[in-house]
Each structure stands twice: as structure tokens, then as C-alpha cells.
Length: 342
Image (cartoon, rainbow, N blue to C red; front, side, top):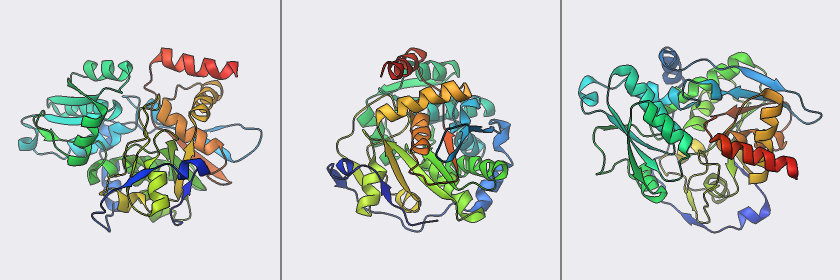
């Protein structure tokens, strides 16, 4: 896999960012762990299709439809792979996570599968459609601010929660579960040249990259980030994990964190690069996916589609991982409707 690089406009490279301390090095997700996950995750997840969208020019773009998962997001893969491995003692007080919505649904769904209680610290940027889905899955919701939620993501702990913590991305078992999507892509499109997926915390990209690195190392794997929240781009440019100081909330709620966790840096630094897209490009990609593939993609998924369409992932066969479709329909309609007016 090529040396990681940032692929973004010059103005983004000038944005201020804060250096984070570097921690563990040499972190590795073995292919055997991903293959083991593949023997079990389909007890909760489904194998999703890969479809090509016809374009007048540019790369061959394929969509990996994780919107078709039972919870409408890839997160069920990682969440179930963690929860299925917990002992009875670890499950006795229930499980909990912190999330903008999709990881919460994944953990809640997995907990229900194994008969465990679940509670979720939900950040205030989560759209109502995701909050409603979490409640339907029987999880208890604990509200918090985005900043407090991100502190919990970094510290792996909260004195407000009880039970076994399932990290929404920074867990080798969670990452290995996500990596099963990479196995499916390689099986369905052996000649894939590049894969683009949105970056939230990095668990999806790390899992896919781990599978691809072992099985087809010449395939490029790129992160897609919104211009309002692109910590990996500035981290790759600096060569170390960074905070994105000009972070802004947007309809891309499932991607674009405030920082790259130092513990995730050894995995994310090995990616082929980060492709930063504008919010307008994301909205247009969401509209195109609805028109050509008849699917509803949320903002994070739109980031991946926009990055693939941009041509910055290179030529050839490019797969965009449509990571989720959990977006308020009124928000979706307003976004794609605004595209039509431009």
C-alpha cells in the first residue's frame, strides 16, 4: 500500500491544528481475526451487494451498499463481533457505547441478540432518526454534548455509564468485524483498484485496509473527510496525529471527528491518503446515488461517494463504501432539493 498522503485543497492545509501525543506503534489487525469475524458476524449482519453506477466519464465507480444492513449501517459488523465474544461476566451489567447514532444502533442490536442490556451515550449532534432507532432497539439513552462524548471516545471511560464499554471504533475486535466488508469487496470485485470509505474514528477504514493489505496490496485505500472536519488530512500532512481546530458540525454527522486518536494512528497512517470534499460535493453525491442507485445515503456515506466521483482516488475500478443511510428524510430532501436549484 502506498505511503499515506493528504489529498485536499491548499486552503485546508493552512487550517490550524493541534498536535496530539503519539502512543503505540506497530498496531496490526491480522487477517486471521477478520476471517474469524467472517464466520460469525452474519449472525447479525448481512452480506451487502456491490453495484456499479454509470457515469459519462472518469473512473468506474461501484457502491458497497452498507445501507442495507439491518440497522442501516456497517457498524453492526464490528459491534456484533465484539459483543459475541464477551463473557457472561462481562455481559452481566449490560454493555454501553458512545455514538452519533450508528455505532449505538449496532451495539444495541448486538446486545439484544445476546440478551444483554444496553445503554448509549448519545452526542447532541445525532439526528433524531438515529435517536429514534436506538430507542426502538431497547437501549437506554444518556444525552451529552459532542465535546463530552469525544472525551469519552478518547478516554474509553465515563463515570456516567455502567456495564462493559464497547468502543465505537478503537477496538481490534470491532475493527476486525468491519474488515469483513473488505473481504466481500475483494470477492465481488477482484480487480478493484481503490476503495474509499468515510473517516469517523477510523474503524471501518482500518478493517478494510487490513484485509486489503494482505490479499491485494496494490489496491489503494482512501479516507473521505468533509472540509468541516478533516483531522486525518492534517495528521497525514504533519506526519503525526492532530486535532482539527476549526471543526464544525454539519449534516455529515457520522464522519469527521475532532481528532485522530493516537492509538488509531499506526493503522490510519498506512492508508493511501485522505480525500477532503466540500459539503456541496457531498450533497450532490447523495443526490446522484438516489437518482442512479435509488438509495438514501447519509452524509458520511455521501463523503465516500463524492471522493470516489472526484477522480482523486485515481483511475480504474473505485469502490465507495456507502456506510449508512440513517438520515432524517426531511434533511435529505432539503439537501438534494437544494442541489437541483443550483
